[in-house]
Amino acid sequence: NALLITSMLFREGLVNTEGLTFDTRVEDLRHIWIPLTLKMSISKSQGLEISSWPEEEEVREGSTEEAEGASLYDLVVTVPHVLDARTGGNLVAHIKVGETYHVRKEGVTHQQWYLFNDFLIEPIDKAEAAQFDVNWKVPAILYYAKRNYHSKYDLRIKNPIEASVLLTEASLARKQRKSHATFIPLMVSEMPQAGDLVGLDAEFVTLNQEEAELRSDGTKSTIKPSQMSVARITCVRGQGPNDGVPFIDDYISTQEQVVDYLTQYSGIKPGDLDAKISSKHLTTLKSTYLKLRFLIDTGVRFVGHGLQKDFRVINLLVLKDQVVDTVYLFHMPRKRMISLRFLAWYFLDLNIQGETHDSIEDARTALSLYNKYLELSRGGGNNEVRKVLKGLYEKGRKMDWKVPDCDTGDG
Image (tube, rainbow, N blue to C red; front, side):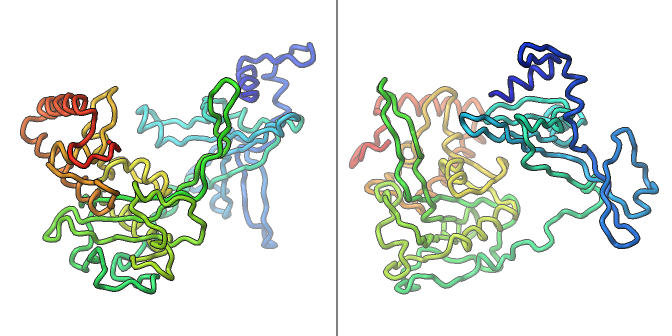
C-alpha cells in the first residue's frame, strides 16, 4: 500500500520528504526517463536504430517515417519493484487499457493507465507509469507494443487445433480394453458447431494438503493452500441421435504423488491414474487440454454444475457466453447454493451420488436440469421460474437439504 499512498500524494501534487514540502508536478519530471514511445528502424548498414519519439509528434498515413521502414512502439505496461528494506518490497503494475475495453464498459473511446497494486486498482496519469526513482521504485519489466498493430496485421490464429484431437486415441493404460470403454468418440459427421451443447464435469485429486496455523486468538491462518489437480474430465453430447452419450472420458495420468484421491467426492481410486495398473482410458494432461481448447475455440456451450470452479482448477478461461452453470440457474439472490444431488431429486426424480460421484452421471444430470429450466422458462417465463425456485427453497429448508433414502448427508 506504500505505493498507492505515495501515488495519491503525487496526484495531489505534494510530497513531504524529511520535513521538506515541494511541488512534485515539477520535481518528478526528472524521474521520467523511460520514453513513452520508441522509434525503431533499420539503418543503411543493417543495424537497428532506436530513438525516443516526442509525444506531441503525430504519425500520418504515408508519413516519411513509415515510408523509410520505421516503426513506432508505445509503452503499454510497466512493472516496478517497490523497495522495502524490511520485507524485500513487492511488484506492482501500470497497465494501459485500450479503447476497446472502455467502449464495451463505458461507451467511450479513450485509453487509460491503471495502477494494479494487489487487489487495489486505481486510474493514474500516464506520466506516473514512466516515473522511476531508483531509491524506491525500480523498473523490472517494460512492455512496448507496435502502434496500430491490430489494424495492420491479421491476428487470427493461423494454425488452429485440428478436429482430429477428438477422434479415437490410444490409452496410456496397459490394461485398458475397448470392452471397458465408457465413451464413444465423435464421428466426423458429429463434429461440434458453435452453439452446440456439451455437458461437462471434472473430478480432482489433492497433491498437497493445506498448511495452516492456529493463531493465539483462535483464528486459523493459511500458510499454504492445498493444491488440486484435475484427474478426470468428461464431455457428453448435448444434442443429436446420441444425446447424453459421452464422447470424452479421460483420466489424467500424473507423475506427482497424490496425497488424497477424494474418492467419496471424485470417484477416483488409487491406481486409476497409474498407467501400469489402471483399466481406465488414461491420457496426458496436454492431450485433454487440446480437446477442451478445440471445443472452446469452436464456440460450444458447456453445461455443468459448478463449472466456474472446475475451469479455474483446470486453468482454462472460457467466455461467460459459453458457460451454462446450473448452480446459478437454480439460485435465488442472497440464498444458499443448491447441490446437484438435491436438484436432481427435486426436478428429475433421480437419486444420484449415493456412494460416490461419477462425472458421466453428473454431466448428464446437468444437461437434463438445463432442459428442465428451458421448459419452465418457455412455459411461464421469469414469473414461473421464480415461483418454482421459491417452492424449491421451501422444500429444501423443510428437508434440511437432504435427499431421502440412502442419504449420505453431503447435500
